[in-house]
Amino acid sequence: MKKTIAFVGVGRMGANMARRLKECGYQITAVYDHHRLLSNSLASELYCAAPETLAEVTAAADVIFTVVTNDESMRNIFFGPGDNLLMNAEGKTFINCATVSPGIHREVYEAAKAMGANSLEASMASSISHAREGKLYLMLAGDEAVYNDVLPILEQISLNRRFIGGAGRAAEVKALVNMVMNINTAGLAEGLGLAAALGHDLDMIREVFSQTGANSRVLETDSADMVAREHDCWFSAEHAAKDSGIAGSMAESVGLNLPLNLATMAQYQKMVSLGLGDLDKSGIAELTFKGRHA
Image 1 (cartoon, rainbow, N blue to C red):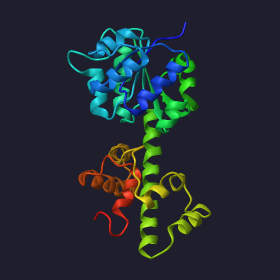
Image 2: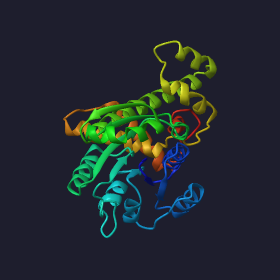
Image 3: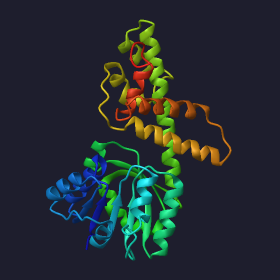
Image 4: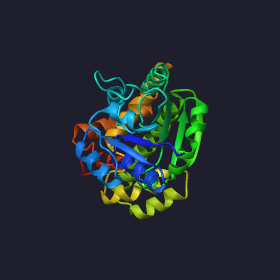
């Protein structure tokens, strides 16, 4: 029989993963979000429960996906006093998809193990549309036997997967991915901003970039938005600042200085301080184009 599934954190990614698994024939038994309107709306759509407590979520399913925003949120849902996901969690499997620090993933892994439960990292490097279509790219870590046990579920939400190793290792790799992506995005914004200030046609510049060493994935995904100032959010500047910070903490822990990451993090933190944190990461161009934000 197929395992029953619940979700904690049903923003754009979590909700679309739940919709996808429902369409694939899995029984979604419960959804939970601290924004009750989100969980109540999705529960009505999926014909499932919207429990008021985290312990009820754990009781409702075999597998619980968590898609939260940061270390504090992760700590609250697993270790919150009086109500958390680890209450009576024996035999349950938690699949944690948030981009949070490797350290909190390791804490959750050990705590789940002590309760007779399983915790698996499933770091995502894809967009909202990929979540809806079952085309995520997942980086996974934890116990390989647990990974193999839930693989049929993971196959329905992802096009590609890479099992990386023990607890925390997928989170490390995801932080590296986002660090490099953020640096590339900041570099592209500066290049286009300078080209604009020099009076170059930006369609021409983008075409030249695409045929030379200036090419990158973010040129394809973000450059038109930077030029048009269309920053509808797929991956927010606030999240970019957080993830560059995770990478910076990792570097500090091994005695490395990463000046490009520090400069990029400072730019995204500046966006947040200017009230631009909800913009897509492409909004970093607002800091680099002449005549936009200072």
